[in-house]
Image (cartoon, rainbow, N blue to C red; front, side, top):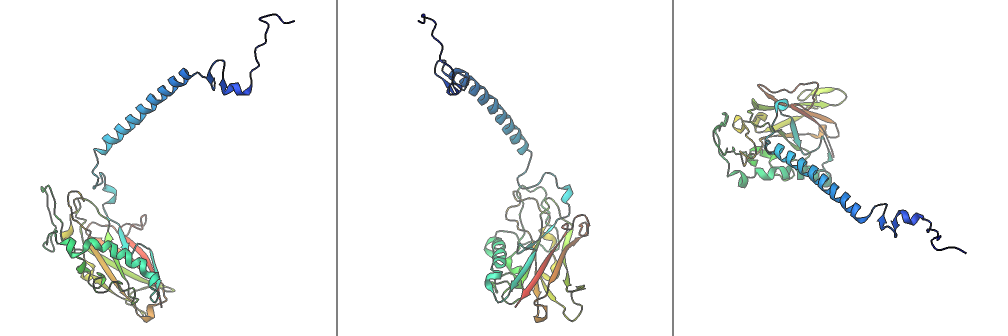
Length: 284
């Protein structure tokens, strides 16, 4: 016969490690203990978040959202082609194959429409448009119509339907720089079995440039930044590749280089500095 007080304590089970009904502990801690831990980590991580946000905010106050703080390593601009493809390959009889190229060109040129450019200044050609000391800088007009046959105004297919496609080239922006640039020279090579200069041989290819001779006028420089110079659009050079029947079904490699008094375009370590190369193949 068991005596009072000799009752055995109920054995602990694995369920008690989750919740112990005798002590009210949940995973080994009481509610007050869990509350203190949650309070500590809330304050701790709240402080870290606040300190990080403050540091980030202070850093952002030193930056201009439109002009890079340091640009000494990009004193020479790179080049970009439109359509946005390093390979322009299509069949001129298949509109679906070149539709994306047309869309890229049309999208870019919307801001070059006369209705958009009328707000900008008619600047004096051949001179830098210096505006030092002006709080709000003005921009010179670059109208879509300056691109002639490559403007898409007379031919909405930009020559792609005729197998004589247009390609636009623009320089990356270098803020507060005149770029020393007055000419964007397009050097073209045709790749068959060997590399031949365009204009040589029986399968020569003609190229027409807009503006004439592929020049970018000085009046579009310097660039002061988007915020300070509202309405600014980058000047463009258009090349109309006048392919003939002999040029179809042949790979053509086109290299474009920018030339200026202080610009680089032949750095072997950076093949995209001041130049761009793309492949063209038109079939019928």
